[in-house]
Length: 133
Image (tube, rainbow, N blue to C red; front, side):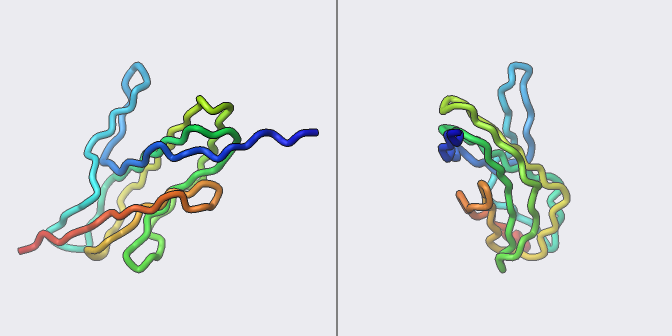
């Protein structure tokens, strides 16, 4: 018995934004793309934050999750594992992670990590700045 073919997918994009909507034709609308959050004082509560990831060019079944880390590298938030199934190299899968009421205690460089089957695929900064005068 042959094992099924498995080709690791590529992360086509990952986007941090304030909201995600879907048009009637299936297209996604990403609103409020950002990488920096300014606040006049800390701590702050960010009401809703989305991380949108698109996987493509792979074959097989995988599990993806998103982790948001604090400046000290501790985990601030983590979504549940999401199953991804790509039947052929033309298939694509979009995962939308929603985080509600995240509490950011201090300004600094936080990080967004995208993991596939537990392996880090990409890590990028999300900077919180103090805009107090």
